[in-house]
Length: 201
Image 1: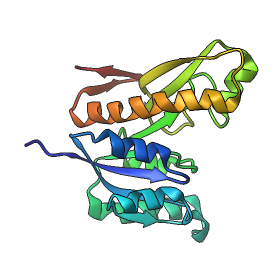
Image 2: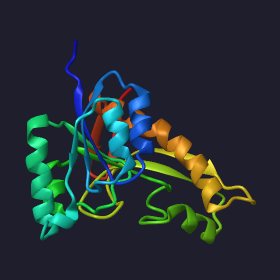
Image 3: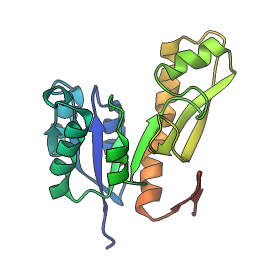
């Protein structure tokens, strides 16, 4: 049997994307640790319910972003992590951390990047008046929401949409494509050339 990809999931909040990854039961991926910068994140309870080890590293207890990230790297070492997945992790990773896990960090964004980067992407889409938005899984680079795109899903915007109703539909697609991107990574089916990610099925 092929070795499973050892996945670390970084969380800060409720953990709905963590739950979607758990529920997807990706055969080629094993969640070996959940990392939270928020000691009160509900995601921690979700991890414990499934007997997944948790490392709580409160960024407020560290003097700088680099010290915080050095502690994350130190805590990750025993888990021999192959891939890091950001799932509602509310900290921007520095170039220091990104280089430590180059092309091995994935993020999920609730818009069709490069449109509407940053926070409140669904509200940005509604305010701009576009007819479609969606979600993007991308590799993390040293910018914010600028890394090579792995998968995207399109979500139509309805005339009566609010930010909440739109996000609800976006989240359904997020929960579908994020585990799929992890499976492709684990099976060696992703190839990065410059800004482009090629998928070999």
